[in-house]
Image (cartoon, rainbow, N blue to C red; front, side, top):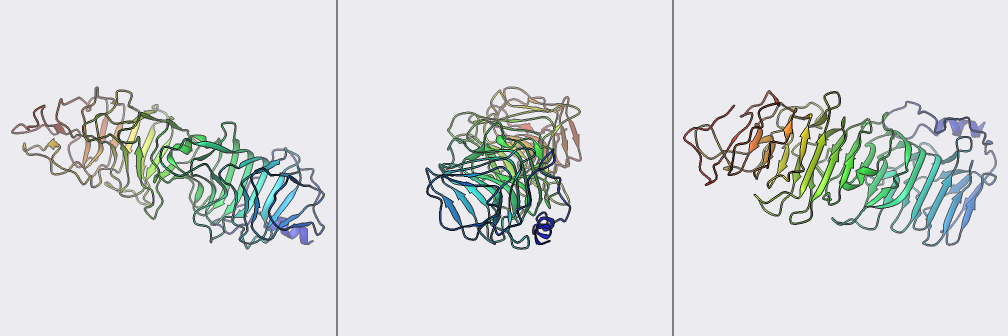
Length: 441
């Protein structure tokens, strides 16, 4: 009876919802119930160990590290119960390879007292298949996920390193996130079928260049259904964001990491490719900046956003009640590289305070009062690469040509609705001057 009660409570972690999640396996588990006292583990793991199904439940009463060079293997059908506030840290290898009928469970010993996390640390390796992890990321953990993946470092320019493989894994219940990818730590390309639900801050928290590795899965049923991208790190490697069925949310609601930057000023070109159907929501006062070494130089950040009529790519506000000017917009602080593409893209509720002025010509012929716009170019593009796109509810201009040079036609083929300023502004001429009156469509 005690075992049945524990099983009934495992899915009810301390999170925002009480919906019962879909089981981790497609088939029917044939694992026997673990009704005995089980095995209590003390101390760190310094040599290879196997935690068996027969020895289950395996009780972890204090933080436990798998040291470098050691491997902990969880046998199919094994069950691990984590004490309140405890963690399992893999500096070595943690292998949990179940199958559809022999799943593995890692869960809070007491469902009302979450454990902290299962984490892979620099130099470690985690490989999970058909594993259910439930009831973690206790309130004492600062934003970590139930599964927390670290790479070799946190500095800009560190290449992402695959430190974990997750296949047919369910994360059910978190006081924070379900999965965190940080410090250049990412998942293998063959990771697949990840399900995350009942998490208070969102399904996943990641860094800009690590979001490419997020596998196909189901990321709904959380208090926040989205992939939170903390952009304190600059995107310095080519990255593709795939449509995973929930929006990418740039920055946390508290304002942390909302200034999203693509490419290092003076660095090599970095391509950010966005798949059709992707929705990107930006926290208030945030911006998406394609950086250059200096204003007017070629921006090293390149955006390749090619949507379709049926599946446009959307940049919008993350505010609960969206309003014009919620965020600053898409900004190239130099001349856009010719590889940039915005096709079937929607940019909504942008045009917030740019903190810049005098780069283009206002209708009365004076230098501009501000550069507030949904899209702004601080260097002349080679061609009008924004096509078949919609600018909606901008608190400033639609597209700001904030440079000295030619006035390119960004008006044709695009739709502008509820734009407070000019749909497309007029740049200064090649000598940096403005005419007596400037067009303001």
